[in-house]
Image (cartoon, rainbow, N blue to C red; front, top):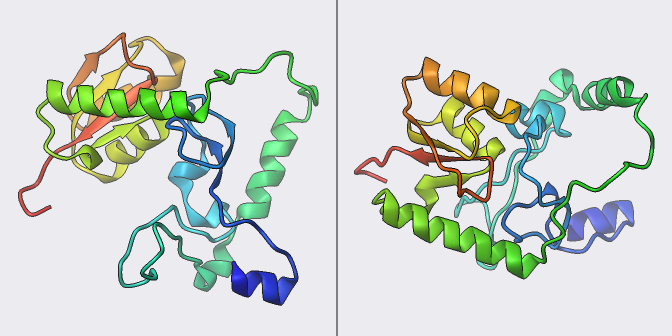
Length: 197
């Protein structure tokens, strides 16, 4: 950020800004709703050539927590502006001001409490040794089913249209699905634990 501020004369606070924050970790979030954000599974070529968040001790400073990678080598394949233009064209008929907010209105502290309670409960109920094997939310569950070896998919509502793709992915990969009506999120995926993790 310092380099960007110096080169472009724009100062951006060193805080996390996100579209959706289920767990209350970001400084600023547009929503705390659990919904699938397409770029969370489409990655850098529709996200300004910026990766998802990563933690790599070799690339981060001693005081850094998470970072991201800029993939300048893929500039010829960047579809970010096209992606945004297509979304705008598809949603142009929608009024500028929504009729009602879908956001839960919960405080960051409340969201953090809900998230931590869920992680502890799931870890205990399913004998999960480390919380990073628990991936709450539709976006994270989608990533697990696409890119990891999933152990189990938990769904809040087995008939929800929002989880249709998750049910299809789970079935196609022979991942068990369990209905869990008391989930605070639409979906939670458990990653299969490997002994060398």
